[in-house]
Image (cartoon, rainbow, N blue to C red; front, side, top):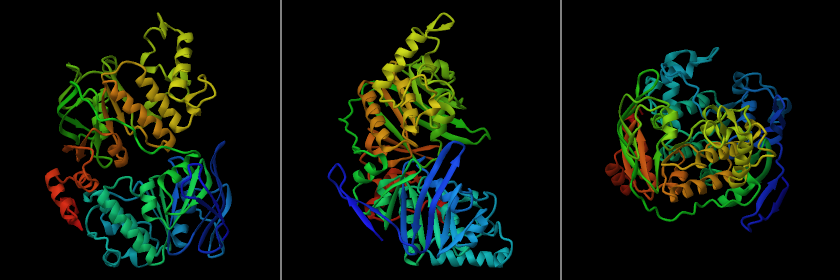
Length: 539
């Protein structure tokens, strides 16, 4: 193997750029296009038995697309897959599994109403696992061997997400996989569950499995990687050693030095600007997803809502804007009751809203950047003259916002769909922050955004706080919560587990995210023990 080293512009650890040897599993020149867009561009990657190879990159860098090609979910436009020197073409996942490749997906490929054993039997054309007794025995054997306790007869829908993920891993191992792909596996886990997963991955590595760990989280990469490969915009941009600093890894991901720290002074909260009292919200199926939630946010503070995805945070944010009508409870902003108000009335009352899914709810893709910047004020002066639009004012506003928010675009008359994820998010934030606000609700504001844009977005959120706005920030990223929060509200299964200080130990926050009350979580954290949650009795 040839190694080439360079020193980063910031003078930190050297980044190792390396050519990989033949052997094990290799991807050679893989290219995948979707129309005119090249998602993966001439990528070479190798995975050796007995190592954890981290594939690092921001969302949209091409990591998952590359692994979907490896697993037979996508057909490459160019390149080949080589295992032990022999070229393979996988037309579907079954062929990939037969060649010794397993994949643990970010979104679990499990049937909720089936048992653990039945899920292991799915897709079998023959063999012992078609026999329920043999399959059940196999579950117990693998569960014991890899210290992943799972009850074979438990229904998937009754298991917490951490245990469901164990089932995904056991499915791959039941096929005698030699090479395992973990695709963003920590996205839905508590910190304690992440630690458990890391131990499982290390155990598999020590047994000789080759593991690809896909992530965009620098902390996790440095904790577990044997080798690190970084992708950006569909290409391999370099390789790094596990001891590389987070700053160096971030620089390799973005292409420039990035300040990962959030500079903010202590908050100086004023009067309460948002009050939520005993709020209850149902999902379309009628299930209660926000259950008696109460809190207040003062002007000049950031209250972060933390929790594992799917515990009611999304519905809570939507209820703030009026996208979802609460069953009961009260939402009050600056003394005005908005519980049953429409989104239009809520916006007019002074609420800014950054939606969780910008592609669906944040903008109109075929509208220009300039048009998207005034979506919530298109009928207001100076952007409207009677029933007509004032294009001079609209374009002037767009040029100002483009500079102020560092929106990287050739022209404000370009469609917003032509922008990168980070620049789309800047447009949304620019639109919301370009008018006086009482409250800003920001849901997953940096999801799918590169670390350079995150640096900018965090700075603007803090500036909005310092102008006296009450900021309600919903995030599943604990690093973001710890960096931005003045207080942290933890949700679990639609309820508030507690509201705590931002310097609360990570292990305590993790236990609270699993439903453990603050006092109990603190005791367990101090004792250095794992706190079993009620749901984990299945194991």
